Amino acid sequence: MKKVILLLVALSAAACATTPDVIDPYEKTNRKIFEFNRKVDRVILDPVANTYNAVMPSPARKGIRNAFDNLSEPMTFANDILQAKPERAISTLARFIINSTVGIAGLWNPAEKMGLKRHKEDIGQTLAVWGFKESPYFIIPFVGPSTTRDTVGFTASLFLDPTDYVIDKEFGWEWVYARLGADIITIRAELDKVLDDLYSETDPYLLARSAYLQRRDYLIRDGREKEYDEEDDLFFDDELDDEEVELLNLILSSKNQ
Image (cartoon, rainbow, N blue to C red; front, top):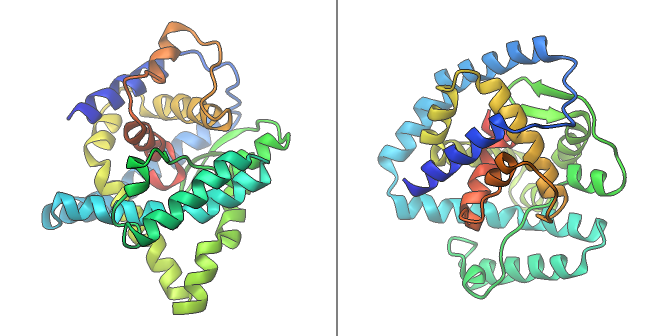
């Protein structure tokens, strides 16, 4: 419950905050796609998520989530290298090795207890570090909020994820799609209450847009401080631990719509 309350406070703050770099020339169309994605979520993902939460014990859900997070570490490692961040790359590699072995394929997260905190890097963030300027915001059908830069990164990741290549080689491409589907379900199930509260807001589109753009900026800067208004500071409240910040990232990521 603490996570839900903190996340809602952060999201509400983001809705009120000023986001100076919003470029949304397609807002009219974006809102229609946002509502379409919302209906898809209500009809398909929400019932599946509720069923998953009902039949799967909490410890099992946590273990499965850990395993999927562990599978994303090779992609993070690759982007750490591309961004010339050796210390973060070493930390990511160490996490992956420890959690894949001692943590039994990532079901447990002993690396966290050893002080190796998880972070995420993707191709969209790498493009930003390389100088790809911010671009128009838009909603992708069946996917969710994005920008031109993040869409290029998202599309590239579909073909360049090293984990997918290993899964394909060992088990076949059908297991790659199975991984994606299961990953989406576990994320949606974990955020069921938060998404319900988000959609109950007066204007969830503005809330999601503001929070998404600010969160992406925060991730690109690796959490480094930037001057914000008081309301913006609350969005990155220090009371949010790493797991709660990650939940916030998930609700705003492309997989959550």
